[in-house]
Length: 129
Length: 142
Image 1 (cartoon, rainbow over the protein chains, first blue to last red):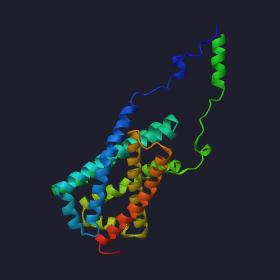
Image 2: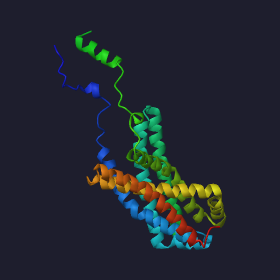
Image 3: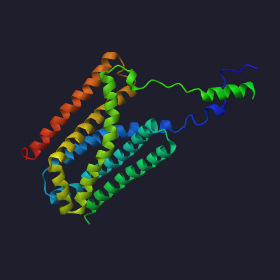
């Protein structure tokens, strides 16, 4: 019996199909990139305003609500953006399963560590403890 | 072994066809800018440590902040910060380019070339402007 060339048996495509979670990452990457534009401009303004100032002055400015809120938004937005971005790079180039899943996990640890450590620092400055 | 099984075994033995990679394409500005976008994203991923260090040092106290300032004031620190500035601006402009493409605009040959050129010329110019403004804000180079 001649095999139907149009047939794609499940066993042949197993592991190579869609994960069905791609569009979510795609959209979130767009959302965080749009948010990143004004937040990055704000970061430049804040950093330039703080250049060369004493520690006490830097602390005072970073602790003010508007600056602290902008910095919190910047760091959380960028941490999420870089989390998705690095995941995409890992999936593109790392094909060994052990290495791939280790890298994906390390990516999550690093992105969360950056977000939480930076947020903690901003909040500590804001609450002035 | 049935005919189907033999056929499947033969398919498994045969090396799978590979799609061509970077080396087969002719160098072009759009091609290089595409690569720059991913490379700057990759480097910025680690560069965020600078921002985290800055915030944590400020929250930790004058000594920790003095260490951060010492590193940023050194030649290496300034080079790293200059690179980070350019990477952040380039990736942001590259992102704008991608957002324009997401609206299905900017795909004509001339538009593609313009966007690629605008990305690199824009990122270099803006980086220099930011640094000049930064030094002016500090009251000149130190």
